[in-house]
Image 1 (cartoon, rainbow over the protein chains, first blue to last red):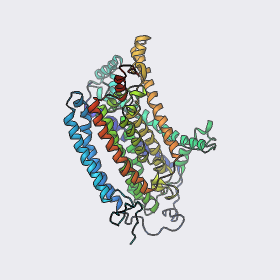
Image 2 (cartoon, chains in turn red, brown; image 1 turned 90 degrees about the horizontal axis):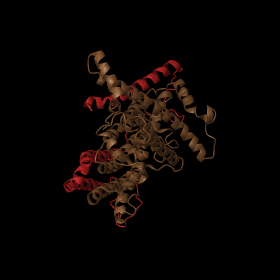
Image 3 (cartoon, one colour; image 1 turned 60 degrees about the horizontal axis):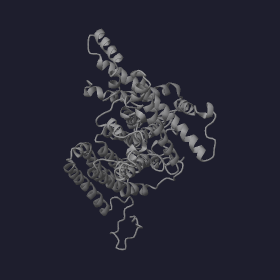
Image 4 (spheres, rainbow over the protein chains, first blue to last red; image 1 turned 90 degrees about the vertical axis):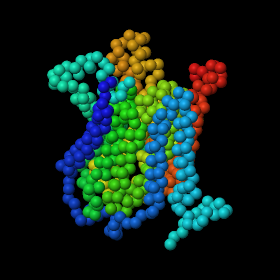
Length: 146
Length: 398
């Protein structure tokens, strides 16, 4: 079939345009139909009926940052493994799967080493213990507050 | 092979004559124009169908939850309350649109759009049947993982822009949860890419068969575990219970969409229900044989050879059967997703992260190694084929 690359990716563009049209259209229709009488109190943020205190854009737990760092490492590694995975069957059927398998295991080995490292460092614990790893292997982790 | 829905149509002579006539009239090659028209029509059809599915999803959710809790559920609007979702939609459009005064207006506006964009872009590769896959990209699964990440961005921006503490907490939780569970999901999908030898949905589905023992879920023990890991992972990716921490209504009011009213909230809800359908479809295509239909009914060979039905009709019927096969598997999974929501209690946030990083990720890595070694030592045969060899052909046809 004479499909250029552009033709194959056409539905992606069309669907994205449709998403814009759908969201924009529905909001436009809503704008025409709905009532609009904003008041000072109505436009405050919801804080269970109390007047809001301060802004929400405050400092947040640094754990989120560590999680996102770990995620980036794993996701890039996963993305690099996709091409390798998709050619493995072809090589394996031709009887030359060994070299691809070895490369694949090397990649997974690096990933597994990453998991073990993060685990040992305690970066996979959401509630992180500030004590050094206990000798008696206790499961309960004391959270140290300042 | 059919790469897109256009190449499916182009295999028929009747259709090719239309294209050549159009080319003569316009004096240029009309293939691209025709392709555009077909894609646009298909996109509108798929969008309409999936928006209805999303709407009916909210109805099904309420009706099934009512069933599980021995209640009636919605039963006023239309027969058995089935038009409830339309009434809800009208209500949402008529609602006053309140934007918090201290909100970040720009990101507040684009957050629901990003959610819809991410979900709708995934429709392009959803394999309804061998012909009715809008475009069977070579990088199908990879593309799907990529664009569905936009939903996570939408959720985080929604939570961040509202400038409400509840929304902020929900958005943070949503972002960390979605990116964390992407790791086991990606690793489980990699196992299937290994077995199928390609990333496109066409390759993956045609590597399976119509009967359960030909599905990848029962291919070998590792794929069965991969199926469970992937299913748990996509539950978390779509923020469904027991992983609905971003909108945990009993602790965070409504989570990331606390400040969203009217249709803006509607788009978040619609995007969630459509995404559940999409991920159920992906799980069905990757593990449950996708659109395969037994006896060659899908390709129309059975009808053509045995009943002497013309090719175009036989193939049309085959396509319909394939869509039926895919959609019924997807809806069965959809039911399971709703069932799980109303059965299991919500996880705590640290348990959620422990489950992802300390259980699912190592298990998924182990699976991947297992699948790769299985393919190497057993030359890609499934466990049933191996058992067949052991039994000396006794159970070979099983």
